[in-house]
Length: 177
Length: 447
Image (cartoon, rainbow over the protein chains, first blue to last red):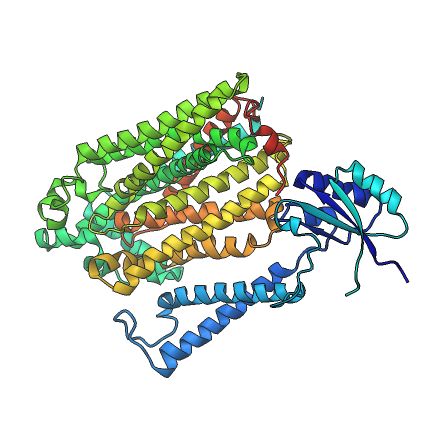
């Protein structure tokens, strides 16, 4: 059984953090997680994370919203209770389509945005009243934290992290979750 | 320093010569009598049917009910009215072809100038590597605006009849135009045009001078001056651009009005300008220049092309839907002529300016591939030419439109002139604004 020990290195600048991430990855250490107070541009690439697929999902959700809007408005305004739109009682979806464009647009955006947020929560395993996983409250203010699992290489890692400009290094026993 | 490649110079000059011949043909082929005009339409009618292009010719009497020009003539010369009207339209056609192309390429330079001023005023860090490309494009602004001014002045001196409100005979029988004469009269119109042209070119001249002076400067004095100048220019620009769009485009249809027309024309020129910046930057890169311009810069220009294309559609649709919905006769004629007589260009423009860029530029990776940017760019440029065409032609030539030799000739002529002047301007200064304080940030720029 591997030890549950992890090392926490704290940084106070995003540029220093970026070069630290690159240096640590160059030494073939696995970085478990990085906690930052704001999104750092290019950090995902530096960490070697897989590219997000949420853009594809967003497109699909938008298409679903668009289709639902078309079906809904066709039923409401044309089939169920035909409406005289703009003094043009044609009762045809296509001829009245300009009036429905705002609805179609809003539904597309609504579906894309909400379903994307829900997808993101599910993928990140976030739900209401969940206990925060964030190990150090400073990372919600102005500090950056890098978490690296230890494999009996505490000295070597500590030296490396010091060299990269970490302002604080701690070894922590992580409880299993 | 950049040198104007011989091959490109020859291409530009041959476009100018070919285009000039096409334009000259347009003027020579225009009819001078009513009989000639009617004979031309009779043959064109048969050709039109042969090509299956029936929508444009199927209802020749339509413009009597809808076209604004028709109203005045009907009371005066009831007998020969249709022939006379047709003659005017066909005589207008070569002039309108020249005017559309002249206006379109002037608008590319003006849109680029606005983009440039926004970069300066926002002190953008990503774009300084592209400043010289933008300055090259805005080099066309002076000749472009002067050509448009000459065309407007010729109209003012009744050498053509593009703007019917300039004709005292028409105004005498038109109550609506009479109510607008304090604004729509030739002297005030030309003075306004001069004010816009002076203001825009004055900014362009000073900003270019400061930009070049900054290359040699030891401090950032000129950069700061440019910042202040650009902020002031943007305030001047948004007012004069709006008035320009009423004067040079909307007044061609003097009964019709739209309150967001200035924005709509601005969106069109803005996206055309940004697209041309991207196309020229990619061309120069492919020739080994601008080596510091990286994929991220092109990506950002692609984002702007995508975003402003959607912005243009938003404005186009806002204008269209309100007028379509309210269905007020004096407003809705504008779209009835366009949908009935200009069906193909009207809807083709929507596909080219909205659906095509939307689908092709949506993917983040595609915006970094030069092939996709060039493809989308060429379609956007042609689409916005058709946009300007749709703004001018229905009021100038009614249902007698055709994109033939005069129109293509005028487009080629101004394209050649544009290429010649822009690339000539690029040779006059180093392609890198070496003294710009944000140049380092621009070089390191990654998204």
